[in-house]
Length: 268
Ligand SMILES: Nc1ncnc2c1ncn2[C@@H]1O[C@H](COP(=O)(O)OP(=O)(O)O)[C@@H](O)[C@H]1O
Ligand SMILES: Cc1ncc(COP(=O)(O)O)c(N)n1
Image (cartoon, helix red, strand yellow):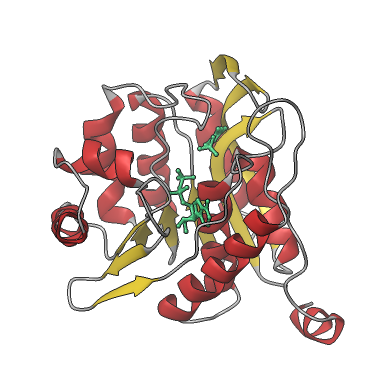
């Protein structure tokens, strides 16, 4: 059984964060583990309050896992503060996981800031260089680069700029752009577009968390990076297509087993 670890915030409403990540890992036949960085009191409409977790127990959670269990891939989501960014970077520098997918979570679908402004520069200097792949959405890529991203050309320029910050590869997600949600990949050599068709729904809570966790799962299962991203795009598109109204705000995407029973037994 392959393993994946999510280092992220808890979403009490279950649509995003740690909860979405673990559902995605399970749906891919990967054994999921979690390090909680913050607890949010959240539902489909709002983030009411956030409690950051003490850095000492974040360090302990990471060490407890790595000192006992082999981790095939790590996904990083909400970190909240500069101190937590630095704590997670220090632990990753100790345990040096082979695969790190960084989703630079900054603002929730409901509009709540999930990362302090002071944390952005630490994220850029300390965490991006450790990432196998970083998966910003357009507003996050604008914060990381200082660019305004509207046109296709802007997507290319933003990817180049984020790659220069030290990540091995970038997937700039197009969910927030007008038109079809096409995502652009860049690894310093090749660009390729991962094309999508816009699904008209307000139930998109957890899309970014789910996409990055699906990529993490595919990499943990041994797929190459490009195939991991393409299959994850299929997974998130189906998950959005099957999303449902739960609560009064942005409902969650639907997680499902993306492989047959036979394939599933091969993974165990
Ligand atoms: N309405 C939609 N229809 C189809 N795909 C979408 C839609 N919204 C987002 N996506 C896709 O979901 C993934 C997450 O993207 P995005 O919503 O931009 O990220 P985030 O959740 O971090 O804001 C991307 O692959 C994006 O293209
Ligand atoms: C704990 C946590 N992590 C991440 C997100 C972002 O997800 P979304 O952009 O879909 O609100 C969130 N809302 N809560």
